[in-house]
Length: 157
Image (cartoon, rainbow, N blue to C red; front, top):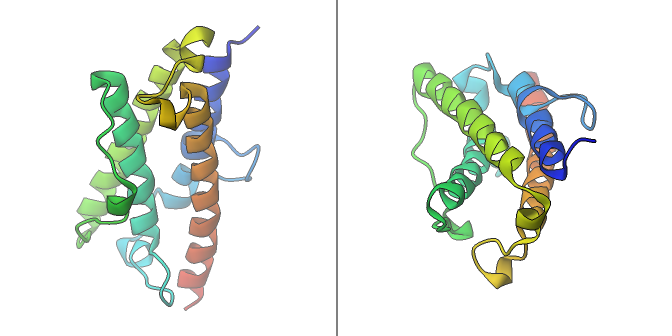
């Protein structure tokens, strides 16, 4: 029987790296090979695809630090503040970092046992590791839907 942590890791990989079960797509499928002009395309007052992808990576990097250093240094108020990506190589480099960060986080997920999944995530107010990891997966799906729609709108402009 597959462990709960392995299932979480697989669900996270599915939404980011290679799955299609829930949304029939994933971040890598939507973003790999996407031009920076489409990633940066403004649709009204909405966030760009690039900003949303960086937003997700912001949280991934923040949670990675929890696994490495046991501190949570990210703040929601800064989760959309990024230096603009101005050349294609910046976008491509960001995507490679994003994929690597996500795989590293999935590896951390896999190492947790059931007791650790129930442990407090940094502080009591954040709940358990399980709650936060499931929340991260749901957050990724939420923004994946936005990316799919923004991509369709940007391409049709």
